[in-house]
Length: 416
Image 1 (cartoon, rainbow, N blue to C red):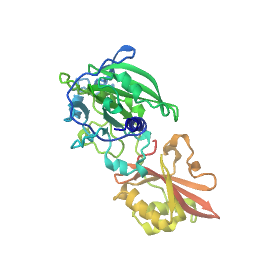
Image 2 (cartoon, one colour; image 1 turned 90 degrees about the horizontal axis):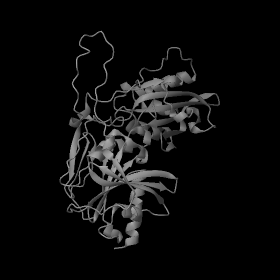
Image 3 (spheres, rainbow, N blue to C red; image 1 turned 60 degrees about the horizontal axis):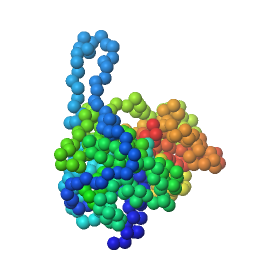
Image 4 (cartoon, rainbow, N blue to C red; image 1 turned 120 degrees about the vertical axis):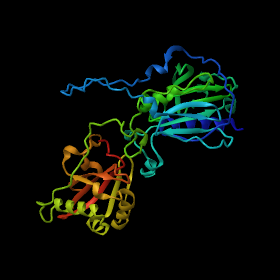
């Protein structure tokens, strides 16, 4: 076996999981304990971050029933227990999360993923690019054998962390022994030398020649109650029980179904946009009149009219990703088949900047550069196959005429 190749591939897997996400496997192994970690020990218990479900204080009210004690919801009912029969690894996940365990072990090492979104959510993003602000979370659990890296089978976790650090791509900053569900683990902190960012992952010893790596994307999600709940539930040794979290899981990304949470979703203080443009006073030949024509054509799916209102070429940008341009007929086909819901009656439209998304502080006029004369921007919600997306529609002026020049599409409501 080519040790150099395996080491490089291993480092690539770790860096990929730290920045984006991975996927695949392993063979069955007896339980055992990896040797001691030669790193400073601190009395840290990962379970200290476990969040308990508590009852909110009642608001002042005249209702005589308001002060009666309300039942405490058992959050553990919204979690499922998972077992990897190949290794005996057990853990809990929120009831709607997807666990991509392979059905069969093809005999090779690899990883499997756990995530709070489905394949439809991925396909709704151009080039499967998902931005960190959409609430998507992906956990990768990867199995590794020290012997495949020409390391002793009793290699401890600290030595393994050092061995898989590629000096050209990353730098090992710190290792810390921690307890996860009363089991020894190693929290590793690395620096990515390509962009100077830091990332963390956990290592667990499953047997003398089998190590589990637990990594999260995005890194900020490592501190979320759901991820901490998965992490702190892990049971490797036979005598250790899976610790089912007592909290109700957080909501999925917008548009991802979570039927098991029906009636218990976390409420948001962000009100939904409603309404359409008022077109009674729109002047003939104005940008407002064109906006009303666009709105009307979208609501009845009149693709021929939409194409006639577009500039040639027409541009679509994708929030958090790239975009492209094409002739109007190709673009209306793209919009009709991939961007509009089957039922367009739920589309909303506004030009009120007070209800526009923040757009990370970027004035929307700047999204297409300084060379276009933006006359009006419409913010519209209700887009996408599930109606959970949104779009910015740009009307520009050129030689005294108004055109629907472009749009920016988001699978969710941008950063609203």
